[in-house]
Amino acid sequence: MTLVLLHRTVSVVWFSNSQLGMQFLRRIARLWRETEWEIKRLLGPLPLYGSARQRETFTVIEIENIVASTFVRDGEWHDEIGSTNDRALILAADPLIKLPYLIGTNRQVAGRGRGTNRWWSGEGTIVFSVLLEMSQLGLNQIRWPLFSLVTGLSVAETLETFLPYSSIGIKWPNDVCLAGRKVCGILIEQPERPQGRLVAGLGWNANTSFATAPEEISAIAISMREESGQTYIEEDLVRCFLQRWEFNLATLAAGSFDLVSRWSRLCTLRDRRIRIVTEDGTMTGICRGIADDGALLIEDAGGPHRHYAGTVRIVE
Image (cartoon, rainbow, N blue to C red; front, side, top):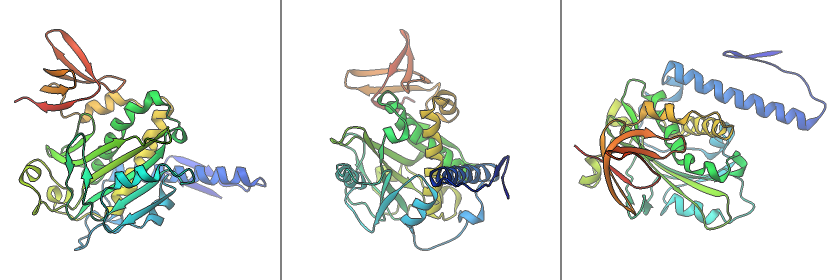
């Protein structure tokens, strides 16, 4: 028997060795996920994935479905929680937890952003965190600074699948923008123990209503639903992101991820005059994209400078 997956052809055989058989089945599952992504990338949002289905309720996500179709091995979904990242940081100390582990919620009441920023989320926002073991992904510590950028890039590429005709971009280090406004924020944190684990928290404005949002939020944020007028199935978005994220992280671990060129295509800061505030002070110059180690490149009269952390603003 033969399975045909787009350009891939896989011969199905029987194995007397159960371990080899399981390895083969895992390979088939991975090929299918990659093929599913290619179909969605080439054809855009399909009715199968619910991009045009209209609903009055939001955030219907079954952890079992996510585990069955992505690299997530276990998880939990809450009706309400203080912070999914805080929950992930607590669970990180459990030596028996199955990783990657996903924590999601319909309503987050004590979310945190970078630094002292608070994380606002309204009805229709997808809020979840993923706890990962970096060695399990094949990522040694020298590649950790790229993890945040690849996560943001994976969100942006997922958005392109569902909104192929919209303007999508990334603002360094990992804010994802839609039509010039923020559609997804990402917070990466490292648990105190054990070493080698990271938490990636996402707040994704899928069907978000900003009717009750603070004015400073509604002025700079946007949701997918506002952009397209369609209601999106949150589980489809989460699944597509996790599949794309897994693929990108595996490519990064293999050393074949072309971050600079893929980032450049979506960079909202490139060739614009920007100001960055860091612990060492403030610098203003022209953004020249990113370096291969993920640093932001800013050029002034003294030449290009690399920055690995800081708050960036466009100077009009």
